[in-house]
Amino acid sequence: MSAVRAWRLFASELGLMAGRRRNQVGVGVLMAIPVLMAMAIRLSRPGGPHGPDFITEVSENGFFVALSALSVMIPLFLPLAVAALCGDAIAGEANQGTLRYLLTVPVHRTRLLLTKYAALVVGAFIAPTVVALAGLLSGWILFGLKDVRVLSGTEIPLVEGLGRLVLFVAYLAVCLAALAAVGLFISTLTEQPIAAMLATAGVVMISWILSGIPQLDWLHPWLITAHWAAGTDLFRDPIFFDSIRRGLLLALAYILVFVAAAWARFGSKDITS
Image (cartoon, rainbow, N blue to C red; front, side, top):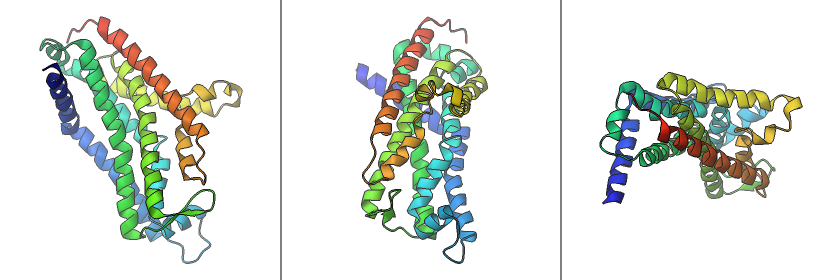
């Protein structure tokens, strides 16, 4: 029975997340960006082989629309999408006055917190998946899909390339799940969802800024965005796993630390609304 109640709570949380109009608009924006990229490249397609490498590569194989869209959107758009979800997790419920009601159902605070984080993880997986699918579909329609030329210069079969794209999406999702853990903790600190969203997005922006300061090179490996670009190593032949492994370990560390911090804060928080 306890498992059934947990599943119902999780399904309810997913339903709330999917039913919010701003989240639906956000998914639409994420889908639109790779489509617009593909259309722009199609309309500006160079007449000969002397165009920029990026445009030439995409225009010769629609597979690269998905890969390019993910690479372009990971610094800002995807983190913003996760940050918006984090703003609603705890702060949004408190702001709307529904958090206190949830806790009188009764639902244990730990279960509620873990359920909300699980829903955020689902959102973290959906965001890059939507971008990849929209990019693949638009690339297929406008340019066709062919065998994939990886960063090492060799070609791999399209099926293998699609498999690596799935791994790339999964890797980005784990990185975004780490950001979701940070956002969940921030969301327990305030009752203003906008403030939680901006603070979560600010963590990413500050991380990017700090990573560009050479004097802080000792800090760079520990920044949340330190290994986000490592997923492109999946498109080398052979695959470079060192940076990917470090990225996964760092993401796991962020998840453990900030989910624990959110639990400690939420467990002792005085719920007034």
